[in-house]
Every structure is written in structure tokens, then in C-alpha cells.
Length: 458
Ligand SMILES: [Zn+2]
Image 1 (cartoon, rainbow, N blue to C red):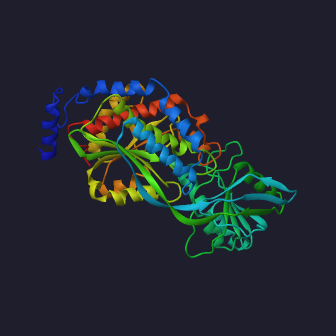
Image 2 (cartoon, helix red, strand yellow; image 1 turned 135 degrees about the horizontal axis):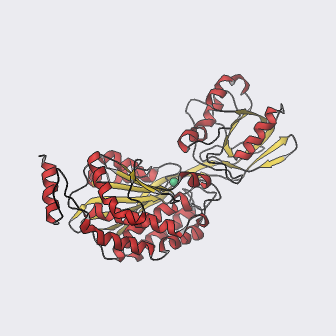
Image 3 (cartoon, rainbow, N blue to C red; image 1 turned 90 degrees about the vertical axis):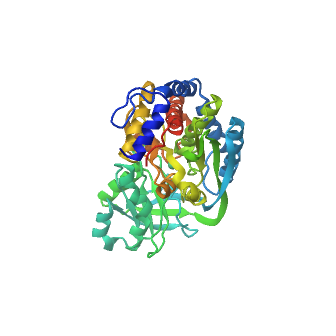
């Protein structure tokens, strides 16, 4: 018998649960059922979490890194956490990039003049004040661009790549400008990354390669990309004028917000939960990621409210600057490097809460078994199946350093990516019951992991 298994059995026997099997005590989660049910009932008793999300997004709106809105929202969150009675509430300083969009526009200048809705991509440079005017070259993907590379010189290259999944399509947003610039393009456009919506462009981050000229870049809607494609297919030479004022100003100070429920027996062991508090600027960052912050924060608030204090510390972190820098997640790792290995689980919610939602886990088989057993307590929510895909951009750095198992709460991706990084990311699209369900499942899961006799194995 491995020493760790022996300790596990010894520890489990302390709570007096059921029969022993090869390496597990049958029914070991039963003693947790009452508190889990209390947490679930409290989360579903009202719309507190949805109301908090509405207050956050109505009051502060978009929370782009470097904006006054984000700074004000952070101060509000600190105050609200203190009012909730969370412990050790404080901020941790991080310097963040300050990309400023400025005015921007795109128009078809020929054939007849037409203004096209667009959003500059985060990180893009500006055009000259008069804009960039050129003929558009539509490409289906990177191979198509390479094949017709000689035609790209002096053109505005449009990547009209239909959305399949975020992972498959996003490289054209993040890397399209440099792909086009390599062949002499003067600007690049990308069909917005998301399912076809209501002619709504999606912004998002982009990066320039170091070995090629920087050109301005923006997203347009699927409808406009297809329209331009059809015109070009008919042999029309479509000319576009792109104007952008985008620029980076000097980095500014920002903060991760931290609040805790201190563990009663093993306070040095940490269950980390959170989302990112910054957002892109077109909408109000409700699904991405105000709701992720609120539902993970809610797990701790509910424990406090119900006077449930687990053995280990539950630490809520509202990370700054996920969208265009991940400086919050990296800053957390750097500031907590010494206790990285003390993190026994890291949980992130950054994929919305749209039904059907799921909890995903990434970690060892031994840990997954335990998480799956805890998840039986979520049967009343219909969330007892644990999928793969735990993790997140903010918890990733500390998890990599401390070899920490990760969980994610993920909503339906089609609904999420339809409004992702658009003006339509508002609280109106989020059902209060879906917010409560997320808070309920996270609270119950996190409570048991933080309180169970054995530490979650790595
Ligand atoms: Zn996000």
C-alpha cells in the first residue's frame, strides 16, 4: 500500500464514512451532502449573483485594461468583498498595457460608398490620419494567401474564414496582420471570430511578428465579409478605406483583487477560484467575464453567509488584464511563487454560464476520481458529469508552476461566442437561473475540495 493511500484511508476513517474498498471509502462524500445542499439552496434562493453582475456592468460598463472604468470597478469589488465579510481582502499590484482604440471606421469607396461596421483588433497600430485606401484581396485561409502571395502587394487582405471553433479560427485574428504584411499588404481585415450573429463585429487581441512590418488590422462581420467576397467573385474590384487611431500608451498600474475564507485547519493550503475582471471595450463584459468573477466570488460569499468554514483556504481572485496581456495571471504566479505548490486546486470560470453548462477537470486520474465522486453531490443541478477541459488563462501560470489540478466552469460555447467581444455582451443575455446554477455548483464543489480530509492528489 502506498503511503499516500494509507493516509487517505486513515483520514477518511476519521469522518466515519461507510465501507472501505481497494483505495476508497464508499460514501465518503455523504457527510458533505447537508452543507452542499445548503450552499446549492442558498445560491438558488434569490438572484443575488445576477443582480451583482448587473450592478457591476451597469455601473462601470466596459473594463478595458488601462481604463478608468476598470480602476473604479476594482475599488468597488474590494469594497463589496469587505461588505460580504470575506477575509484578507486586498489588492495586488500589476502593471498592465494601455491600448487605446480611438476613432475608427471602414468604408467601401467603390463600388458605391458604403460604411461597414468594424472593430479594430486589440494591439493594432493606427493608420495614417487620412486612412489606408486600397483594393481588397479576399483569401479563404493561410494556404490561399500563400498561393496567391504575389497579388497581396499594396492590397488590404481580408481573411474570410468561416467560424468553426474558436481555437481553429482565432489564429487569423491574432496572426493575420503579419501573415498579410509578409506579402506586402497595407492593412488586413478578418471575418469576426464567432458564429454568424446580427451583423456584429467581434474585437479581440492580435500580435505582430517581430520580423515583418506592422500594418493596421480590424474585424468585420461575417455578413460584410461575404458581401465583399460575392462582389469580388463577380469580378468587381472592391476598394476600401480603413481609418484607425489605435495606439499603445505607457503601461498603467492595475490590480488583482483577492478575498478569502481562511481555512480552519490547513490555512496554508489553497483552493484558488476566479475569473478576469477586465473586458474588451465594445460591450460591458458581462459574459466575458463579469459573470465568471461573480459566480466564483459567490462561492466564497455563500460559505461566509452560511457560516461554513472549510479546513483549507478558499481564495477568490479577480484577475486583471486577461484579455490583452494576461499580466494578472502572470503577476499572481510571480507574487505567489513560494506557495504555488500549496495550491491544491485552481478553478476558473471564463466561458460564460449559458446552458448546457458543465464542469471540466484537468489533472491526474486519481484526482479526477475524487472530483467525480464529489460531483455526485451536484446531481440536483444535473451537473454530476465532469468533462475534460479544466483550466483557464488566469489560473494557468500558477497551475503550471505548482503542478496544480484545474477546473473550469464552461457554458454553451455557441451562445458564448456569438456575443464574445462584441457590443452585445451585456447582462440582458444571461438568465439569472444560469448564474445561480453556476454559483451553486462551484460553491458545493469548492467547499468539499477545501474541506475533505485528504488533499486532492496532484
Ligand atoms: Zn474572457
